[in-house]
Image (cartoon, rainbow, N blue to C red):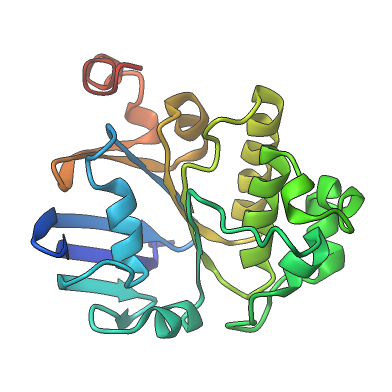
Length: 235
C-alpha cells in the first residue's frame, strides 16, 4: 500500500520581524507516521512547528495539510483542519482544575477522544482530575497538554520537546502513549532534543541545521548513520 501524505512542507521560509529563521524547509509526514525533527538548539525545529500552525511572522513557500494549502491561513483555521499543537511551554491554566483544563479547547473535528478514553490512556490525569493546574507535577502537566489536544479531534499532532526535564519513568510513559497514538492512526511530528527518546519512536528523522533539512534518516538506517548523528548532535 502506498503512503498517503498528510503534511508536506516545501521551500518554507519563515521570519520573526527582520530575522530570517527558516531557509527552505522541506519535509513530508505520511498518514500514521511519527517523524522527528532532530537538531541543535536554534536550528529552526520549533519555528518549523510554529510556522505550520501559522504562529510565526511572514511565511513563504508551501504547507499542504491533508490536501489543503495553508501558507496564508490563520492559526484557528489551521487547527480546524485537525492539527493539534503541544508547545514546549505547555500553556496549562493554573487557576483551573486538571479536568477543566482538559475541557477548555473547542472541538475542531469529529472523532476526538472522550474523557473516558483519555483517562484510560492517562490514568495519572484521572487521579489528579480535581487538582489545580499549578499543583500538578511537570510530567502530569505534560500529559495534560497532550491529552487536551486529543479531545479536540486533531489527527496531526505537533509535539514540541515533550520529554524535556522530565523523570525517566515519565519519559518512558510518554513513549508508550506515542506508540498507542500511532496504533490509533494519529500522525505525529515530534521535535526532540532527547535522541534516545525520539529514535525508537520515529519512522523517519530529519536532521535540521540553519533552518533547513541537512539529512533524512529512516529508522532502518540509524545504525549506519550513528557516527554522523554523534558528530552532529553529540548523541
